[in-house]
Image 1: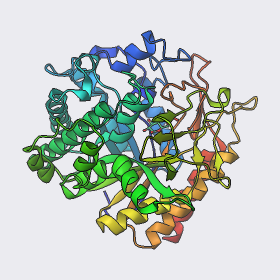
Image 2: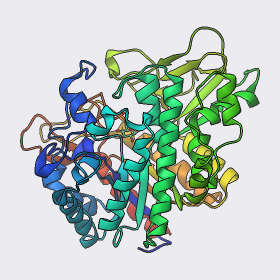
Image 3: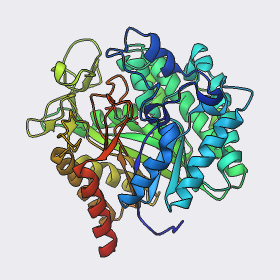
Length: 470
Ligand code: BG6
């Protein structure tokens, strides 16, 4: 890997693209059970086949290469490697990821491997998943198996994808299994255990003296305070504690944020899961670089009235709900009349990538950052040839990329960019209607044809022009 080269590529996650849900000894995952059985799986979609990346990875990697991309971020399914979550290792699962990794290198694509992207083994989910401290060590054991199997080649690793957003969707929104709603105790316990698991895996990685670098991937919900807010500083501080600091400060500096525990205690939120001795694990588990997924900001103002409530929209144009939250006595999200939203009620605000990166630079200096996801969800219509003219995606992503490059010019150590997603994939709870890919997949056709969209060619040219200028 050329350390100085800015990388351009795209990303997927195992459950969302692989399919082969029970192939070659794979164990059952929590999302298999959710998608097969839960009444909360509102559109009945599953990842059983998804893009069938499990069998078609070569074709997909070839397309990346043809599109000028030189890096690919994907995740490993824990259940392929250790089908029961703990214990016996499934060699066929290791063989699969060896094939993917080796093919990436053969084609000049730098693999960026995430160990956990939402898909818990069902055996572990049944024992309360990351709500249970035992999952911390189970994750570290699984991570070590992966480091041993792939660490001789993989240069870029991440432990956990979006621990904050995962804890939020599983315990606040309640749209991801196990579907708890507005449960602060569980939200913080799950998040804390994820951060601890990540730190312990980072330490194990460093102890093995492998050649690569390891990160955690954070969902950047960069907080901006609306004009006219009465207590802007207090709200910014609380919002950062809620959205960001436990992940970033702990993983980068090795210390949990000093203001967090008092804030939780003042609000009667359980802190019994925090153990004194964990401080050593955090101190020994500092990441080498940061992965940042950027979709939106959170736009906040003073709390007005009412109980804590989360606003979320998994129904797209079938619902008018705007993404947001009101936390009793803390803060609430508000509307910016100048900012557009997508059909799922999420703000489209390109400048948030600049703000997030510059804040990271100001707080944590030179830490290398990769934008590990950025993209735009849309309903799409293909023409008779299956071609999609996704100009809206192009406009939106161009805006984010311009702001990312501006942050780079302004001194942020941003080292690469991954678009979400390489091709259309399963969208958590939203199924296959919501598209993000550069390559269209016709999920109604059993052959799952892949057809590059207009954005695929736009991205190819953007990468080409970037290297011409550099
Ligand atoms: C990110 C996740 O938060 O958002 C991805 O890491 C996900 O896995 C992406 O697909 C888009 O979310 P959604 O729900 O719109 O598909």
